[in-house]
Image (cartoon, rainbow, N blue to C red):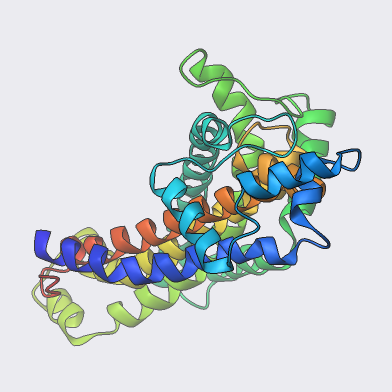
Length: 314
């Protein structure tokens, strides 16, 4: 297992280099002179020249990338163009907020998808299956921000069960954190659940129709043993693959959802940076999202060995 993890980490290095270079090239998309943008419209020519020298804009592009990559390896993403705040410190304070939201959304998605997917796979072409497929279709058809508005109107405005927006630190107030997280987590989790329901249903139907499951039935195994041990465990492999991909999408989905619910995470930080053309922030947050998605892919590959011992990862 350790050799497998080592090989995957080594093979990911060229991908990270290519991705980091693509992220760095975002600076080429800035209209006009980036040094003038950083210095500000009222800067003197001497100040613009100082900025150009500080950020190595007078060097070739490859040399600029080398300086930027050296800073990234030291977890130094530079300063924001607005407020001169350290991007690294902002990411360090906001990343736990976004990860907490993504984990809560994944838990909500699993709590919805697993029971519905199991019921639809065990009893296909029944009214239970029709309900599960309808939920999946609605979850895929309705955008996240529409879900957010509907949930706020129903649960927060009309019923007054939950706050409309805001955030509480988990370590200071776990219950307060939970109250503020329910609506955004449900919003993100419903879309993920819609995809997982279909995946679990299809995989479980295929596994329950296999020869070894029929043999288990013939030997007199209990329905719980057949479904949970033989069926769900093997059907979980493609679902785990989809889950790993969806967690990556959850991080991207937080960009809008955090803004709607006023959550001080990386998503709202990224959206503000895009609107203000704050390039160092955009580069840093994009790179964090990419690295997180790659780590999720590695965890999915490792989980295969635990779900099915026949799959050799070493």
